[in-house]
Image (cartoon, rainbow, N blue to C red; front, side, top):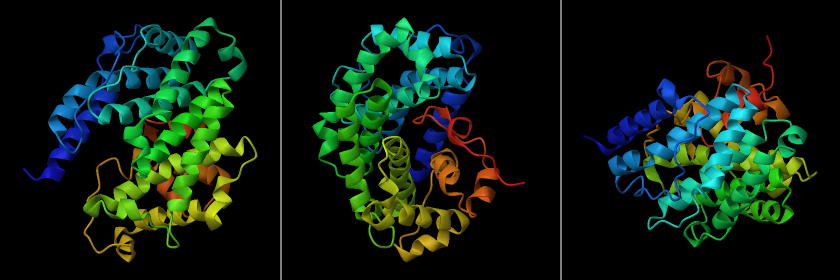
Length: 317
């Protein structure tokens, strides 16, 4: 079986793990906290990765479902349970665990940012969750296995730091996240290209889109502090966004950046386009309504669930 077909099959199984949990898992009873998550690398052992990550992905799906249902009590119960269990704080042997912790921390923070800050932060359960998320962010901040990469994983670490820092009022985490987001913005070339992601070969388009996602959400969080990341490096985020928008409309357009035939995951131009929701809400690009209308609601397990509900704007009639 071709490698990309294997990855696609595994990806579909992960999606179903997230979206089709049995009824018993759709309660506010949290599973035992995973003190660590240590799957093999996705590209090293796709089958082993899929099996090892199931418990974490199932919990994320449970948290996101509660958020989508606007069940603040359930969200707080679930996350407080894992906070008490010091989940995801033990360093694993494999680098993939660092990435998964970064994505999980981002998701949990983005979930909590969906709720009114005053009522949530006054809740005793949040006082248990807050130091746990801060510790997760600090682990990501200090993770050498991420920091040396200089690619999209650094940008995602930046969003982890910015989202948790925003949620917990930790300016130092926000600043650490901003520095990583700015690294990503500086990496964007004059034609919207990311040199490190072009080296992905047949997955270059997928990873350009994947890299754009944390940069857009970092820009949105930065705007709350009157910082305009969209303007930096001569509007670099807009250049990268334009590359992806063109490719969604016509994949052949990506040939301007690489002649390597591209392979997309099933979710590349589905849930991974969730960045378009805040981007459209802010800039109202006329190219986006047809794309969004065909795909809404956009759900993403790294961004707090239903991104359309939490970040989207009405489309023209």
